[in-house]
Image (tube, rainbow, N blue to C red):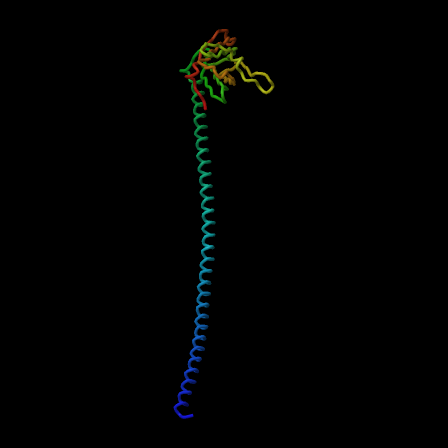
Length: 237
């Protein structure tokens, strides 16, 4: 084998060795780069997982804070409503006390002296359909009041189907639990007395007024009468 062929064969062998060496280096480099990329992906995945857990913790904290704020808001609202209701009740109680004080002052005021029986007030309120509560307050004004005793007779006046009607209060009184009817129509007092009745009327009965007749037996015998207008009387709630 001449020298030229020998050099050609050596060149071919060198080229092959370098080719396979290049392939091996390329494979190793690929494996190394793949490992680096996998490590980078795992690192990024770990960071994402940490961020996700942190986000979950923050979200849980925000949900708890929101629930706490909602509970606080509900408590404040409930406290405000309770306080408002308490203020309204106190204002109503103050008004009632003021009315009571004015009433007693009027009874004791010498300038308000009137002789005989006086209907101080009449009020009514609807309990339910066709059922009413009636309240009468009778007084006597005197510097030295003695016992006032009288027997009362109430008549409800109105219209029913276009016809005027007069119905004794006794007829309209609501029955009590024992089947009877509360009908205290006698008064006996020194300063004042309140009477209360619950009546039931027909749906088509329109009440116009209530007439009251009294036969006074003390301090001296006398007759007394008065008519109260239903529409103009005090309607309590």
